[in-house]
Image (cartoon, rainbow, N blue to C red):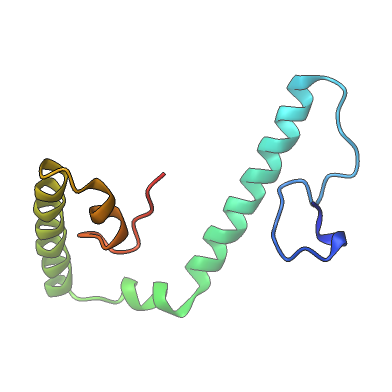
Length: 100
């Protein structure tokens, strides 16, 4: 499932040419690949224009964010208490929250 097969999906094994013989070394290689991917994504996010806009927000917007988070929390608790877990995660009191 590497990128050489024309598959557009990323695999943590794309950069791996050989596999280690011991399970510990193999897990260390996988952990390194995942760490490198997470670092690359975080760096790309920090360099994106939307992250620079969020760093320049005023104090009023942080107060608004706290109020919005509080409302989302209360709506989420109500949805979960009513047994609407799937509806909560799909439509969401919290947008862009992915159920794991």
